[in-house]
Image 1 (tube, rainbow, N blue to C red):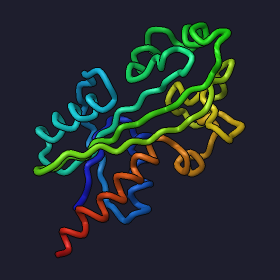
Image 2: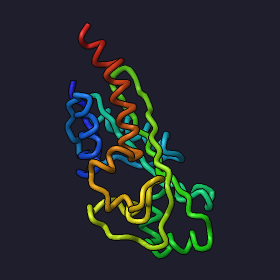
Image 3: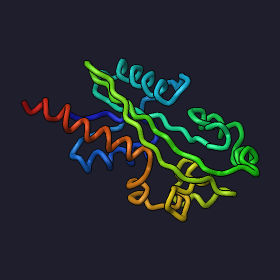
Image 4: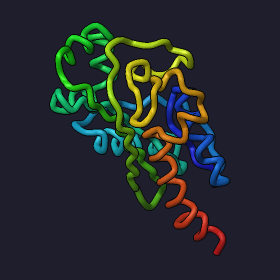
Length: 190
């Protein structure tokens, strides 16, 4: 069975598909745009999964990701993309001025097929830098200001394989892949 990874972002697909390949799971990108409505990562991922499944009728995964600043009551959370579009780096840095800079990326990945839906979570703890760093990989904006715990450089300056060992999205993808290999692939072989 081939899994459709629903995203219009080729870098996100590359990260997820490389993890799935580690488990021998074939995937294809479905560049379908879905609404990002909902009040939490979980709710958004489930709504996106239902919408995508009704369009393509194939087993698929979607994810929703947010970044949570501890000192700001977990702001911007699931609204990270909209907040960045509104505030940019200057506004985000102003929000954190004089505050502890602990933060966490969180991803919720949702699998759906004709008979079930299941969620998988991944987290990456770290801290926000004082200023945006160099964007070596052309990653997502928050990757230019986030240093993972135990590392000394921002995510956007990490090689893809280094990032894939520790990232929130890769962790969620690994949890999905382990579940899928145990529950779905095994049942197909019977």
